[in-house]
Length: 213
Length: 353
Image 1 (cartoon, chains in turn red, orange):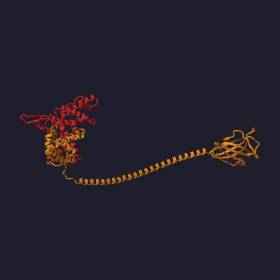
Image 2 (cartoon, helix red, strand yellow):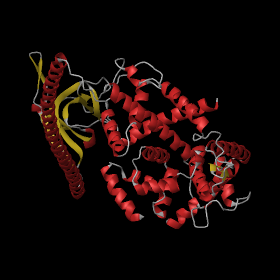
Image 3 (cartoon, one colour):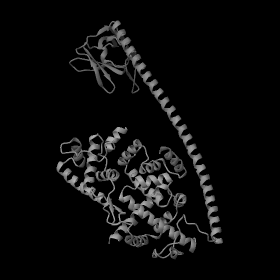
Image 4 (spheres, helix red, strand yellow):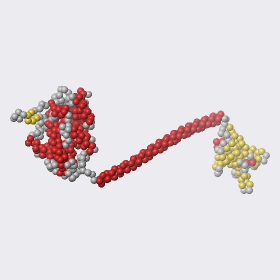
């Protein structure tokens, strides 16, 4: 089971990212194209489209080699298909994004941090990220907090209170507060977490838009 | 490391975390055994909902770190393993900023007053207490204001009404349950009766069929016996005499005569009938046998010669038995002379078979 899963996910000790690229004519690649579309021409178009989707996805995650990671994601699916896994029931784009999640973290863990040195010799930032904005930079910090306030203000009052209540507790009290909130709202812990994640994602997107504008 | 993990699991039980949540947190911190990690990854690829749950637990882990809610071991794994990507680090910065804003808001709220109501938008830089009195309170916010008496009595009245309603529903439920049970019993009884009636009908039908088969067998046997009896008996000619007393005479305008009954056995070939009548001057006769309303059944094919005996004459007729079905007949004797056919005598016969 373990060995098979390792093969599926490329998690063997040889390393996940060091697999050889599949070529046209390879069984896995042929299966991959068929999975995209039985019509070869349409499959090629779908391949290009999904590659672009993955590239944008990795770029948004701050990866500096998004195209390579998009390739690696597709290669991983070729490997999974050639191992006999039936993916016909899966939505192709959603499945690739899920695979991309693991590819991304393999990539970050295997890469050595690139540290840019400041003039005085102190480490300035982790050069692995292509993110245009660094919250730690002092000039940006003030701007960030202004944007955060603005985005919180754009929420409905109940939503804003919910987030503030959620984040206002610390240490052990934080966990107890979550239970209290879930009970108060009559929902499960998981549903509370889901609600918070969606709300927070909205605020984060808003804040990033605000900062770069 | 795994011992630490087990300790952590004990804590997670206290934190009401599901097994999935515990595994995902361990996976994200890189302390889940490889086999389990592979299984988790595989499952998340196949199950989109589970994949989303992993993302949410990832966010929660970041929140816990930002709020100082992780254990020492977890905190180290978080920093060394989990924070590998810029995206996660940015999420952490965001969570830290959110925590900072929320703690600050909480402190201001505690200073200004415990009840927070919202309803209008106010600049976040200002205190959140500007919302007070303008909207609803979230369920988890606690209020220290005194409750008005009318509200208390209203709540009591509502509770009483609910209790009465619940009691009535309970009684009605019990009643319905009894009805259902009774209906079920009645249904079972009717089913049983229907089954028994059906069984009886089947039995009767079987018996009837058996009786019919037996009757058919008996009929066949009777037929066979009859056939064999007929075959065993020689075909015969039946003789009978019809005398003067059987002649129909008209007295006072009414025909009067004694009916002659003749039994014809099944094996009879013919009926030999000796017919007596008063002597006439004629020497040639013919005979006709009629049934019902003048329907001829048989008639002599040639002129019959009489035997004379004193004051009477007699004729010998031979009628095929097959012509003679059971019933009433009239036998008519006529003179067959050139001068005409005068009726000489008429008899009433009753044939039995």
